[in-house]
Every structure is written in C-alpha cells, then in structure tokens.
Length: 271
Image 1 (tube, rainbow, N blue to C red):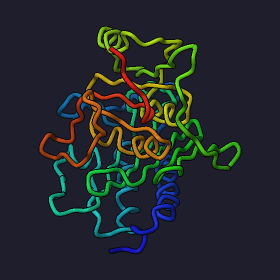
Image 2: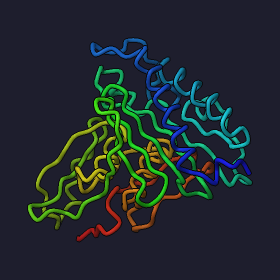
Image 3: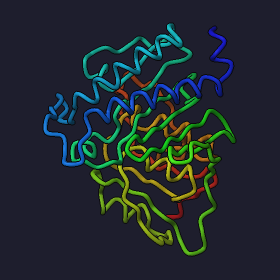
C-alpha cells in the first residue's frame, strides 16, 4: 500500500493543491457574462470544455500521486470509462466542475470536488470554489477547515446546534422542489432559506452557516462525496431518508444518489 494512504492529512494537502490547479483551469473558461459553448450530454445535462480540461488535469495529477487507485470522474463515466471497483479498497470520486449551470450562466457558485473513498466511505474530500477563492477540506473527525484566498489561512469549521430562532435551510439555485421541501420541513421551525449552487450547500452546513440541506432532485455520487467528507469531518453527514449515512461506489445504479439531506450528526427530523 502506498504510504500516503496511511497519512490522510498529507494526502489531503496534495489534493488541495490539485484542486486549486484545476480551479485555475476552469477560470480560463469562465466569463461573468456567460459561457456560450455548452453541449448537452446524453442525459440532457450540460458539459463544457472547462469540465473536460479540469477533469483531465485532475486525473493525470492523481495518477501521479497514487497510480494504482481507480479514478471515477463525471466526464469519464459519461464517456464510458468506468473502472472495475469490485476489488478496490480505495477509489477517487471527482466532479471537476460541480455547478455547470451556474458556470454557464456566469455565476460564481461552482466548485471543484475531489474525494477519496475507502471501503464505500469518504476518507478525505476537498471542495474548491475558484471564483470565491474559498476551499473546504476534511480527512476525519475534527479536521474540517475552510481556507480563504484573501487570508491564506485555514479556519477550523464545525456544524452547529440548531438556533432557537429556527433553522437556516440551504437550497439549490437550479434544482428545487418547493412542494417536497414544504412537506419535508413540516414540524420544523424555519428562520430562513439560503440559495446556493454546487456543493457549497453541503459546505455551508459543515461550516455552521446553515442547519439543513434537503435534496430531492437528481444527483450523482461525484456531486456530493467531497462535500460529505468535509461534513463528516465537521460532525455531520449526508443521510438518506431512512437516516442512514451515504455509501459510495454504486456503479450498478450508475452512481445515482437517492434523495437525501445533509445535516449535523445530532439532527433529528420531526414529522
């Protein structure tokens, strides 16, 4: 086994560098007035040259670090390059540009997501928002941090206890279901609802800026794994509606996720 796998913090620092390099690639294509060259994939979701270029950089860089660890990337999977994970203790799970619709519209809420999965569970994760100059990382309990370009320093983050004035809910900018959200929140005291794009919604819960992120629309494992690693490191997690923590590597269901909610570990749904 590669020695780096026994040193998740050192490996996380390497992944942080790779995520920032990939973020710089996305900025080469980014324009606040919008991105005109998007294509539609077979499932109808959009893809850009920024997605492809950033994923190619990440795949090459991760192969240099851990050459024997399989790589599962959003664009690779859509191109039919799906590794056999049946005997893999570890694999990478990557969305090089999460929030493509946000990117296309000229919005800054898109991220680079890189997670390392160990036996179906996220071992480490890095989420980098290049326009915002903000990075989240975690590799185990008590290690979750937020780094900001303007300060150049890490700040420890942690989920919070729900405040007395009510919950702050974070919701998708482009994928919402108001009726399901209202039903899900029945019995909860809600103070406000924030709108964010990409996996920044998960990171808002991890950083104690929000209390709950329910998701009813379609997602894939690469959309959430890195954020889940950060959230677990901040005493939270992504749960299915039966209350079970997410697991990863479900190639048989095309890496599709069930509906979920991201929350602190101690959160209880009252219905």
